[in-house]
Each structure stands twice: as C-alpha cells, then as structure tokens.
Image (cartoon, rainbow, N blue to C red; front, side, top):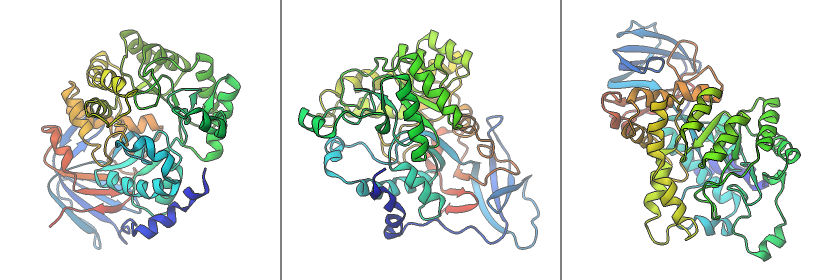
Length: 434
C-alpha cells in the first residue's frame, strides 16, 4: 500500500469529519412501524431500546421506559435494520475524467474523496458496505473503526485479483513505454497466471489487511480492454483462490458477466456472483445447487448503458460493452429471482454516484422482485453473505444499526429515498430535521 494512504485518518481530521458521540445512557427509538427482516413484512408500532452499541430490547407499542432513557420520536416512520451494500468502490466515482485521473492524481487525492463518499453512503442509510476493489478501502475502514471518520462499516477486498490483461489488471491501456517502465504486474499487484500465483495473491491480500477476496472471473465493462464477458480464469486457478481464502476465513466474490466464467466460478466454490449479466438457466441451476449468492448491481448496469450514449463519457473501446452488457442486468435479476436463485443487495457504486445506493431497491422492484424481498436482500441476506450473525435484523443482542424513513417502503418502494435517521453501533449520525 502506498504510504500516502496511511495519512487517511489525518485527512479526515483536516476535513473536519467525525461521527457523533454515542449517548451516555440507554436510548429508546419510538417507531410507528418496524420492518421485520426475517419475514419481509412491516409490523406496527414498536419501541427499540439501545445501549452500549447493542439492541437491548424490541417492545411492541409505546413502551414504558426506565428513568434516564433518552427518547427519540420517529413519528410517521418505519424503522429498519441498517442496510448493507455488498458491492461498492469508495475510492472513486465514475466521470469522463476517470481514465486520465489515474495518471494525474496521488493516493492522497483518492483518500480525500473516499472520506466524502463514505459519509454520503452512511447518511443514505447504508451502515455496512463490502468494498470490492480499491487500495484506499482498508485504510478508510481503519479510520472509521477508530472513530475518526463518518462512514459505514467496511468489509474491504483491497486489490481485486485478475489475470494478465483481465478486468482488474492495473496496466490495461498502458502504452509500450509505460509498460516497460512498470514491468508486468504479478501476484503482489493482484495479477496471476497459475495456481501457485493464485495462492500467493490471496496471501498478499491477507498481508495487506483485506477482509474478503474479489476476483474478476470474466472481462468487464469499464476496463480498457475489448471483451466484457470472456472467461479469464481456469477452474483450478479459482479453486486455488477459494481454498486459500478459506485458510484465512475469507469469502470470495466473483465479478462475472459471461456464462462460461460464471460456471467456472460457481463450480470452484465462490460465495457470490457479481453482475451476472449473461446468466443462463444452467448457471442458475448450478448456483442453486452450490448455494451461490447473486448480487445483481442493476444500478451500475443502467448507469453505464445511459452514459455510453453520451459522446466522450467513456473511451470508445468501452462504449459498446456498456451498451450491450449494462442494459441486460435488470432483466437477468428478474429471471434469477423467479428461478429461485438467492439474491443479495449490491450497487457497484463508484460506477454511479455514492449516496444514491437506495435507488437499487426501486430497480429491483421494477425487475419483478417484491419490495419485502428487496429489503431483505440488503439486511438479512447481506449479513448471510458476509458470514456475520450480529446484524441485518432488529433483535435483542444485535448491533444497533437502525435507520428510519417516512412512509412504508414495502407498500411504496420509493420511500427508500427518504432516509432521515441513521444509527450505527448506537451512534446517531443523522436525525430528522425539525
């Protein structure tokens, strides 16, 4: 990791960003409605008592409180578990300048931006994210955990693992002089071409402090390369990644657009398929057989398809891929739901603007996924993908990650855009305006 990234906590302080302090004693949230993530239904009035970062009790109605308990009235609102976005990139955000900025900006520039993106994400109701690729994210995670920065809980992949010329090869698009100067990237940089290198790359991610492993099993849309869906790993290479990841307690997420690459990743034992554009009936059957999760990222698909029609937004080598692949993801998500594939929530924000993550719920419902299930995808299902059992539901003993919004999001999914209360680990980061 570049030394400049280790300045991120100082950058946060310089930017004047720090989370609000937790209350000194218990806090009671009075909610007109409560989303039950286990059933996917909205229940009636409840009182949630929080202390020391945990939910102490969940009581029906307007409960009588112990002396010294602070009350937060959330009239007209539905309380939900804090949402999880399983696919973000907090280190950047798409723009027409994205491809040239890598040659002009320093890691400190990206770190400053990441602080702002993290704050936007948290205030939108996302108390946890899985950052699937970016050297800034492990440092941002640490700054947030130390209480220096407002942001969601981060499960960080660090550098994604690719093959030479693959979707996450950092030297794609370099001219011959630059390629000669930097040399061919290897496992340390997240580029592998054999089983042994696959194992080395996972071990390097452990050394770098990653929480999860991300591979690019096929080509991608935004990489400076021709193919958006060709398979880019052999099965034994993916198996080596998965087996080595298990040694360190890691799960493996696989970026994949093409059918063959998805098949190889599922058979090799990855935890989740990201994007899944050309998912066939055979792949769906394999995913159900192996218990593989699907994270659609409909938002990113729609965003790139729209922007590809704007001259100059993407390089010419990217535009055809963006149009052909991006526009299909929403339909694939609907088919996968109807086929019984397990779906969890992810947006690929960083492709689209950070803080707009909740729009994915609307796109999921448009695809034919029930609103209650879509909300489960970002709560209970997301916790299952992460392999954690202390979040994703509002129950006694769980983390006090609680959000609230006006209205009933199961009855009207567009209510998800109105989050105005955010609590993470018992700390209130956003309150309704008076």
